[in-house]
Length: 511
Image (cartoon, rainbow, N blue to C red; front, side):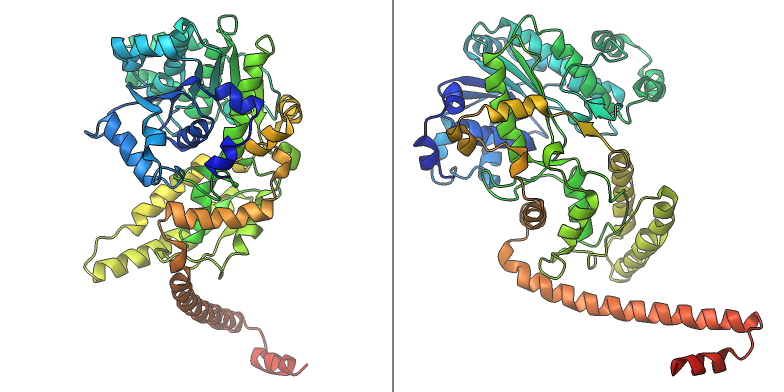
């Protein structure tokens, strides 16, 4: 939808954000970029963007680089002032005490902020306990301290995760009390002189959660819950966030996390065996459904502050399976190709852990040794084996989520969606029932190719020519390998003393 068309419509949700000042964390992240684009469309007065310096680059320079680089800012090239006039950088760091905001910036935030959108998080599943707590738990607590002082605050929104409560097979839209006091854990991390020893016991502390990410997300929700009497709050729990479905553009994404990594790895011929239960529900959700759903839920929470405003943003009402997603993606084999691929897509799955581990030797490690040997012979640096070490770590992280079945209640989110006016449904599409999964699968593959792998669509035919050559070589190699298997099998049977084997085969040939 164009900016002109969006502005031509008046709606309760859009009017709620129009003219407001929004404090946004995680603005340089995947969801954060989408929040920026949508909020600017809504006509906010200002977006206060919490950003830190990174690798010697100032927050302002990082912001300008993001605006120029990302296709999701669809109006920036023609109307840069539309963004620059409404984006104000607040230098800070969500992982540092007090968010490391200067006094002048803090005064400005407290004076002007109407809405807080907290989407920043450390999303690395294998991060240390200390760093996860500092960012996901302490950062949330310190942001709430600031929000309490904002005299004009209308709602505080925390973007959590549906897997914050993944220790339960059925997750309701309500608060859950964690087994550890989050504030006590913050103190422990800040004051413990022997952090190495603390990290050593963190696995026991995290159990039964599978990783520090989901564990600290659960603790952060408890931190938010304790401020319910101080401000209107909303917690939105998306499941595995993927590329956009349609808003503002089709198939956009900017990272290899989660499902994106699986699709990109399979499409480039890198990921060839994966431990997953194809019959299980795929807990994925397009990013634009999350963004629009969060903005709509925040509007609802601001109008109904007394309710327990926890919203599961998942696709349980319109789900697909991992197997269906796999088939949708494989349907594009020979239609969409990638020039920078290792080999042709040969994606296989199994529900058995030990089978997957065994097949990794043949599908991943042996080919990696071969490709590295070729690179060495060409005088280049071997890197495929190192790549597969990363792939296997990535697979280990996802294994818990692809081999467990979860049920997420969505009654509260459904109530909000059903209560939307028709114009809001058009401007903020977030009805989980509207997604056509086969359409999503095709667009997701193309989006990964263009936006993640950096290959423009007009190079697809060239990539397909490479794919066809490699496919022919692949089939010839399989023919040689299977012929060798047959020859070895015959030799073994002969050695075992099977009588008249050749005569038997000759007879059956004409049977």
